[in-house]
Structures are given as C-alpha cells and as structure tokens.
Amino acid sequence: MKVTMLGAGHMGTAMAMRLAETDHDVTVWNRSPERLAPLADEGIAVTGDLATAVSDVPVVITMLTDGEAVQATAEQMLPSMSGDAVWVQASTVGAEWADRLRDLADEHDIFLLDAPVSGSTGPARSGSLTWLVAGPGKALDLAHPVLDSLGERVLLIGEEQQASRLKLVVNAWMSAATIAMADALAASEGLGVPRRALLEVLTDGPLGMPYALQKAQMMTQQEYAAGFPVELALKDVRLLQQVRQTPLLALLEQRLSAAADAGHARDDLAAVAAVD
Image (tube, rainbow, N blue to C red; front, side, top):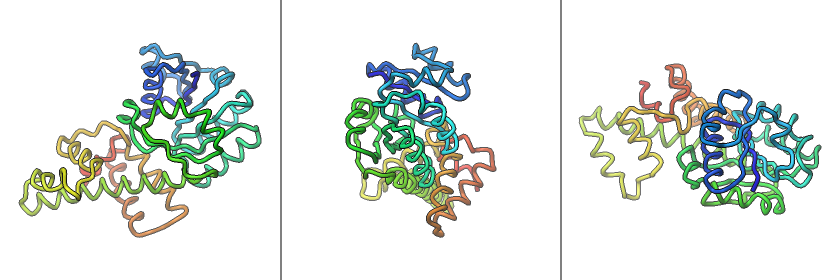
C-alpha cells in the first residue's frame, strides 16, 4: 500500500523503515530536509514537496513533535489529499489539539484517525507497537494494513478523540514507573544493597514491569540512547496537567525538568537516574 510518513524524527524514521521492510510503498517528508538523508541512504523515497507527498496516497501518517507542528503541516497538506484518503494522526498532541485537528479534518472532508501509539523506537522497528485509535470504523478499515504492519494490537477507544487523551495517561504512567525505578535503585544502593539484588527480586516476579526493568538496564549501563526522550515526556506531562493536576504529576514535571535542565533533554527518559 502507498503510505506517506510526515515526520522523520526518531519514531517517524523507525516507522518508515518498518513499513518499507513490510512491502509498503513509503514516501517520507520532514520539515527539516536534512533529517531525511538516513532514510534516503536506505533506499526509501523522500521528498521536500508536501503536496506531492500526500496526493493520491490512501494513508498519510503524521508523527511530529506537537500540536502546533501538526496543525501547520495539516493546513498545507489537507487540500492536496484525496477525498477517500485517511489521515492517521499519530503524534502525541493532547486533548485540546486533538479536537482542533479533528475540526480541521472535517473542514476538508478528510477521514481522520486519532491514533497515537504506545511504544517507542524499538517496537516501531519490530512492528510491535500498540495503536490507540479513535475514529470512524470505515477509516480504521482502510488504514488497517498499515497499522497492522507497525503494531501487534489495534485498540479502538472510541469515535472521537479519546485516544489522544488516553495516550497522555499512558505516557504519564511510563514516566512515573521510570522515575520510581531510578529512585528504587538509588535507595537500594544507599542502604548498602546491590542493585542486582533488587532487580533479581523484581525480574520474573509479580512486581516486575518489563518496561521499568528495561530502563533499569539503561540506568545501570548509563547509556541513554533516546527511545522516548526526556523533553517529549515533559511535554506530555504538561499537556496532561492542562486537564488534570495532581501532586504526582507535579512531581513528574519537577523531575523531568531537572533532567532536561541538566543537559538530558534529548536523552532517553531513563536519564532521570543521572540527576540527583
């Protein structure tokens, strides 16, 4: 299937490469053309012309930084999209922006799937993402071949923009679990207990969370190649705080801000462990 990926950041690049490997006809566009070079080197079609990128393409995916970037891109692309095409809006934009983007799609009579993913670059490359989807059933049917190539599960959350709302909660949970792991490792060592002992208790037991254990490995190795960067985790926590404020969310923002201010904004979320 022909599919266009708009956005060549960490996730957009990983998703485009996976789609190309699963025999989709992929074209990638990015606001900063220099980010397209690694994809071109892999033989994936790239373009700097947004209108050309989306015309006569049945599925267009946006994977951009925030709602403002998505809206600016959508205002340019929607007039060039086919009337029977599906816009898969996979960027994490929060509740208010998701509603705005739905209105924008409706103005141009384009099918929109509100479809953020649960998972980072590794699952994107292996096709094991979880799609959180809200939108009309017809649009989901049309986009299914693309979604199935990238994900193991497609969860239909509703027909409005509930998926973007759920994604904020999921990402806050990921941040909370990662920070809890960092603090548990530090507390263990502070009490004179080797961190391996804590991890042995957690691994394969009822308290073990695979995601947090993966982050623990990164913390132990002090290697923070970005799967989910600190700056994006911070953005998402702040988006959730716009609709719900709790002491835990305030604490998450504080810890993520400290990591970003310490130079880890573009490092993986696990880098919270590197900041006292």
